[in-house]
Image (tube, rainbow, N blue to C red; front, side, top):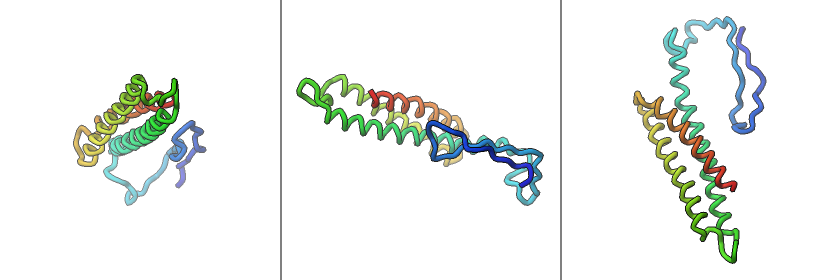
Length: 148
């Protein structure tokens, strides 16, 4: 389509399964029969589309952090210190419990946000933003703790 341009894929440290490019529209003419929704409401539609993206990012963060906790738990059972598994040390147990709590809280908020968006709840946008922010922050902490 004349006036529509896509840049090269961005180089990212993560999320490489989802290519990211800049899309540029330069005086693009869209035939009336190809319009999606009502004319003049494009920004509103684009913003509503972000809700699913926020839920997707929160879900990906949650999945990665859950695997990190699984691997960390396995490691603590195998690693020996002072003649016993480090999983028996109270500090290790507290750390794993804190990690699991962060995951469960993230999962709960994420599920609530997904339900609200799916049902068209007017607060769905707010909850999807909350879930994305909370899950990405907390899941980063879980992965960071797993690496310790």
